[in-house]
Every structure is written in C-alpha cells, then in structure tokens.
Image (tube, rainbow, N blue to C red):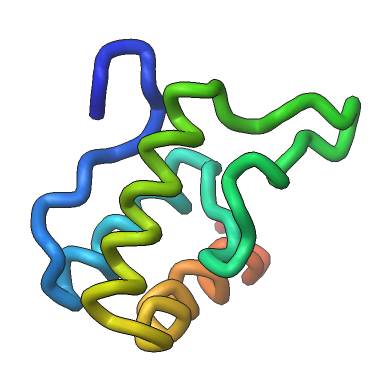
Length: 92
C-alpha cells in the first residue's frame, strides 16, 4: 500500500496472492467487481468517487495485471470474497 492509499499491495501474480488480495480488499470494505473500472465505483450515499485518483491508478494497474495473467479466473478468485462480504454475520 502506498502512503495515502487504502489499496493493499499485490504481493505477486499467483492465484493464491490474487485471492488474498481480494480478501484484503473485502476486509478494508473496498471490494468491487473486477469487470468494473475503478473510476465507475461511487458511494451510494452521495455519488462521490469511492477511490482517489491515486487509488484508481493503482487498482486499474492491479486488475489489468491480474487479467493479463489469469484471464477469467480473476472473477473466480474474487467470488469467495464477495460471498463472504455479502453473507450476514451472526453475532453471539
């Protein structure tokens, strides 16, 4: 992660690292669908961009690298993080 950026660093381009990166994005509440451009992700409450200009550059670079290396497996790797993020967590 760069100073001032909330985007976690991608350690390498292995499938495991890609899956871990998505999990880190989910934990930071920054998860978005890899088919969407970072520029298109906005806050529902006010329509403001979710990511800073620096973060958008980072995210587009990371996603591009992942698609170049893994093709459609990028979506498969993201899937468990999406399911976990969307599943209600029971307390108690």
